[in-house]
Length: 436
Image (cartoon, rainbow, N blue to C red):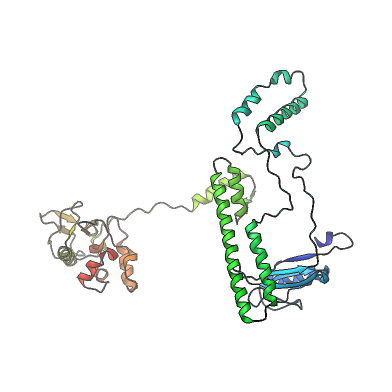
């Protein structure tokens, strides 16, 4: 861009957050540190500024102890003074530069460029449009007689002229504004002027008390400015939401304006390594990749081997006694209430018996013996329910006990897991919502 400037070279101002802590100012020398890419970028910046005879004017820290926000110019006489101000909007200081330039008032620039459609001057989303009258005006035109014996170009021009005349009768025009007119709300302008006046007073203040009072006023103004931005953003969002149905183009343009990611997908490579740029083929490739990461749903495993059942018969007896003493009962909807059966280790015995003598094979039933409270049924043990002090071995046992089909609850777990709370039965009962 600098190489394309006209001769003689005009006055240049280049400023912004360059984020180069590797450069030492005002010397403009490159320091050690940073990545190779950052070092290369900083070196390129110094080469450009040297070639264009630009000097950097900011020599006070703009973020902590670093000078990251820079102001380059090829006319040092244009800068009268500058100051850095802390603000609540960013961790970077605000830089205010007073220059010798004067603002030129430009004339109003017409927005409709030469060759643009004349229909762009109308606001087709206005609520004041009377669509019935518009349609009636169009239907009243004798189009056959108007287009009789005309060539296609003339017919098109006639059609556009007629529609333009009708639009001027029924559709309001867009509101025009001058390009040099500021979009800053009036109340915010007032606050900004007050802030500028306070900064001038702060420079001239000599007593610490006066400086503290001015700083307090500046902080209050900064809060009001921040609230002004928040209110404006909320108002714009509400306006965009209200126009979703009537003017969706306005809503999507608002969303696009504040979107942070504006990258395109592709081009992609197919299985043969060919570059794919066609949108449909790109969509098919994305669908294939999307489907490739899916796996078959996990099928629950049924306990068929008694060795896989970790609960002991005596543990079941203990659990039943604990349930009865705490006014709880087993889920009778799944099977009959379990009573005292054969007191044998389930690793050696494959059968359990109900009170009526009905046989319960050692399939998933041992893991279906879950105590339910009478008023709060269905609470189950989860891995997250364990206290943080539970050993890893206990957590592993719990995780392994929850890998089979059917309800898995407190009485289906090994004894070490059930006693992991380390508290009495009464305390466990009062806190059962945490564990069951």
